[in-house]
Image (cartoon, rainbow, N blue to C red; front, side, top):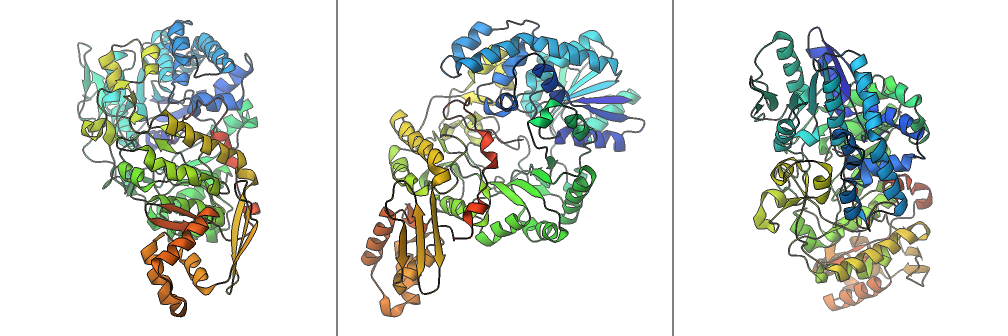
Length: 639
């Protein structure tokens, strides 16, 4: 049995597909008599489109990620799905006027017009390779491209079995895709490395398909049947390492090689250990299975080293939704000792200690995404984040000190929030301009499938509808769009436009002035020297020499209340003990000088230690946000 696995646009071009890499290995190792190949149609598209338009790497990134919540990437290929180069163009223009710049509007319409030609080319190449089964993965804005290719393949060669899977096919979404698009023979819902080989085995032996967990198939009269989803996620031992054969060779032959630095995608864990107990109210990641499970440290370390040796690539993207804390004392020390100069990207929790961040940095984790989302404790409580505003600011400070580039989004629009939650933060943002700003302006939260806000209307969101872009992308009734959509529109909640504007103006200034801003401290034992270069503060050097002030500043390495500071400082310097009013006055002075950050009755100092910060500063991920991104459009996290 010949299996062809297809990675359509708009899959990121700097990353091989983890899903297809795992499926290739699962087919090759677990299906007797079967072999799998991966067709990197996303890379083929870059070569095809650059021969026809002035298309760049920034353009690809826009349609792959930055425009996700606008749906531009999916609309581009809707013309191929419905075999109409002008498919719902008037609706698209009417909806997107004011959201897209004129140049972006022109390019999107042109891509939409010629997308059917590319799908035709890919479909004919797929058919010419004579596979028995062709599988399409669909995550983020791959859905219409994958569906369009499956449709054309089925028209050209009805005997080829078409299969879809991926994040866009989880749960009810996958069942909806299957019942509405009859040219897709099967949809694999949930984790595919067990279900897909089982499907192939059943097809090869002409066995019934009812026992394949999560599979959508058709009965004798053509009716769509959705098998029950698996009741338990795969164990860590069953999660195979990926086989990326062919990706790096194909990238080297593509124009895309001039646009990106390729990265390996590695996976140590699935699910979220925080989300198992406290599911963040807005988070729709993890889909059907939140349960956290991780590979053994030995297994994960060997997979990382083997991939690096085989492909001679040291830049790695760790797709785990959250770091397994065991790896801090197991995997990461071994990476440090290995001598491999790895560059790792990973998501962490914002309350990690500085010593833990140093371990990350020493192991090559130069880019972290700690899920900060807000700097106000009350809003963070509404999210059920389990951290405070001061802890998030401390993360930004310690990231700067340890040489980590911290990527984060600022979100608003939570039921129950008010302007009073944002005003104090807005006032303090000029003091933070030396720390990593969010990747973009503040974004109103999107209501995502699988999130508590979607599943529990009592949390504040009712009357949900699929986002507008689904309606001009697909020819489906509203109830079917509802079952297929991942992002939903709802009445705005939380803060109003005046506060949003004030917040975004402050964030825009932060981003603009970040590169030229500095604040550091140097602790000499008997004195602490602070050096500042920030536009909102005239002072350049401050020296703390009073023993009580030294004690307070050192205590403010961690968030403290006035009462706790007073007690602890008095215990350290009994002869200089001061009352709470005196401590509060000093904190107010430091607040005015931009030395501390205050939130919810707690304070934390915001001056990284002076450790060659200029050399440690890393801004290589600033390409994530582009000029074309709409105001407040947060960048989606890779699934």
